[in-house]
Length: 106
Ligand code: FES
Image (cartoon, rainbow, N blue to C red; front, side):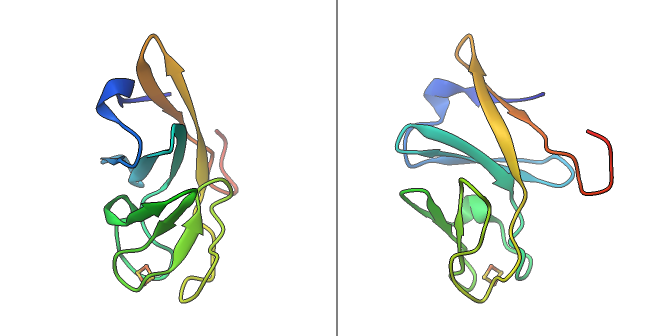
């Protein structure tokens, strides 16, 4: 469980990038919190720097969009999904619970 920030520091429409390995992006999409791997699966762009619209984030480099609920790309040029992670809020703090990489233990 990785502490992210106070919930008050992540208002709707904003994102936070965690310098974990791999980096994680946490979004507040109209009050719902989502966490995904930060690096676009097309090339090397930070999705935390992208544009948030509803449950979609648009990559700032070539405009692929990812669904924050599933990690799936909804348009080209990205073809592979980003990994999603669960997010909880405890005592006003936001936490990310990492999903294991494929083939590794959690
Ligand atoms: S790096 Fe994200 S769409 Fe190209």
